Image (cartoon, rainbow, N blue to C red; front, side, top):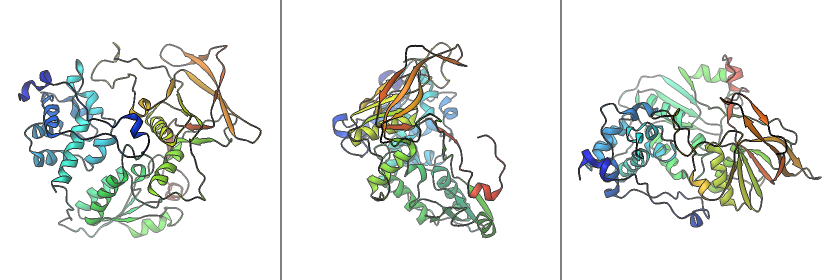
Length: 422
């Protein structure tokens, strides 16, 4: 096999996935693994560019050509060493990262890019399999104590780095288990929670303490935290969802997307208790408002719950299927994305503006009133198209239009931090 001409010999290939009719019956991950031979072929597609744009595309700065080279040579220890230099949790990013490195891949000028994300996942899982990932306790102790507030990916990564620098690290989490969005948000069919627990157990073995069911500003005051530690790192995330101030917003059946996804995470792991209200799509017409990844996760979840129908609407234009002249490589490709959840069943509509949630006499959602819109050039303004008003039947509407800022109540208010609009 010729590594230098691999991009001419092999097409992009992705791991096999379980068929739709099977995977929608459970919440297990459905994407398989690369075989050793396929891993070698796919890594051979990397051209080892003189200027590797994938470095700039990756927010972590992963040294992608070097770990591709090691995979091609079947040197898994070296591949993991290279990946581990920049990436604390390759088993997470190899599953759920949107892979901007692939959009920046030079091969993407005229071919499908290298399957970097799946190669990364393969390296991570091979490293666990070979025992290359083990707890490493720090070799020095500084005597300093650091509190990390929030146990999502940023909080865990910061805790890992601070711990290895020799500081005593305590991570505070308001939920019952650590993991943040990885545990309470991302569906299990994209990231099974044993993957999260495996990493958390490693961090614990390295000396990090996780204190759960503890909200700063409620269970512990910020002043108390400030007096107990040499430094505090805030990693709580932007938890305040963007709302839709529409008539009928108060109707039963209208929910934020993240409340819905968190409910299902708790249901799968057995944390959900019957005194907590259900948000279930079974037998219902489901409407997802918002065209991003969170909306896509809602679609996959609704299909698994047994929704009668799933429709996704967004007020933006439908993206083109290929790059346009004003969106050349290496810019982020503004093209239509069809996710695995869309493949499982979903009607999609663009240029649709939500006007009002409509309910029945019992206060239960029955439909969403919408109108089609037309954007001006440059998408600076839009106009409603007369005669396009309609009612979309739905008993469950999920608002997935992003997040605006962190929660201000409690910790941030007590800390007196300065705030911007975001």
